[in-house]
Figure (spheres, rainbow, N blue to C red):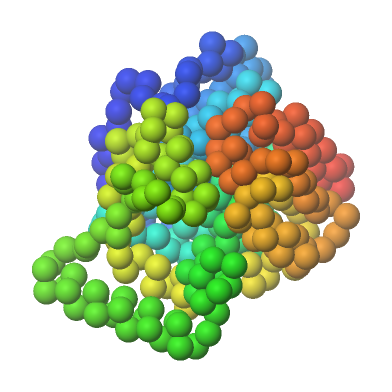
Length: 330
């Protein structure tokens, strides 16, 4: 497996908690890619703990929102990891800055492999949290991985839907997709000739005066002291231009109606992306599925606003789900 060079110093965009122990670990997925993660364990923890793997937002790194969630959940008694997806951050994989609906779903399942094999984890009590585009990946992982007992998707995007159909499905036509595919395939030739991959650019900077609100919302997180990180794709050069190719062709959530484990969708009422959660929720079945709309909240409020993110609800939901599953199967 690839040997990774991990930052030793604390370099998160949020303060370190004195209630948890922090370490860095690596694990690998089925495609042979080594992933980097931050490990958070409650201080004075004893015995086997329930565990949570956290990832997201799409184009972010573990030093941003996912780490904040992981550390917060560790304060609440869980052993947690926040990981960088394949090809990004401190994780391995070549080329850099490419996303895949398949490999990124696998990243979550590989995190469950790792957690299940730790001596201090109760393998029957594992949940996952996905933020933004990784909310969609988390639900997709729950559809394939029966070891996942609870899934929380916060301020979720379905990245395959937004790539194939545009925001609010405004480009949902064969012609629009044909034009997009033509441009992406032309870019493939350019990249192959140049023996490298052109980046699509991160969050727009400087911010145009007429930028839509959600772009300002992203700028406010990724491009300011609030959330900027040197390894974050959105804070810097973005994804490869051709990264969206497979997303156009391979929709996730195709089997989400078959998820038997518990799923909680959380979204801000005023988020441009709220329709993703509302529509994803309609497909889910069973009395262990919930949709929680946070009044007045916008998309990035659920990235880092600890007074808005409903951590009590998340904790209660995951605890009840893993306990219920444990009772059912033992």
